[in-house]
Length: 137
Image (cartoon, rainbow, N blue to C red; front, top):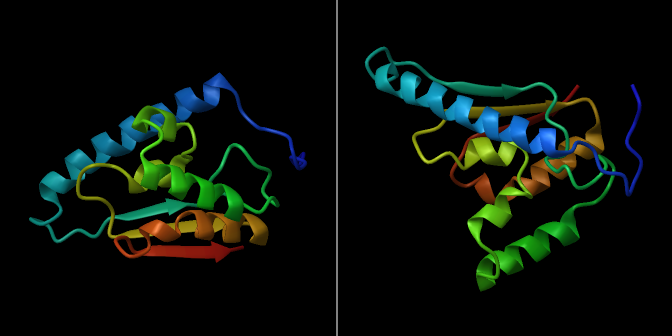
């Protein structure tokens, strides 16, 4: 498998289309499952076996700390609209941002330790409200 080098970007317009379709699918899935989860005492688990770093803007071994700090500063100052914010969100953040009752556990696995750590750092703001699990295999 070819590895993305620092400074390279992956994906294109199709990536955004795929992520938008994925978000719609997960939202529809949760709508259906939420209708019956309490009745049947279901626990819902989100599992991503190829989680990556959570960003299409960086290679897996790129440190995302500065970008996260900047994004949070922009959020605090209300300097961008939500449509622009979506451009920075990968699948993991989109699943966590769905506006309905979500999964009971979110399980993220990646083969690359740096990617796992970058995703864990990127999703840290969600840790207080979601049950997030990260593994490297």
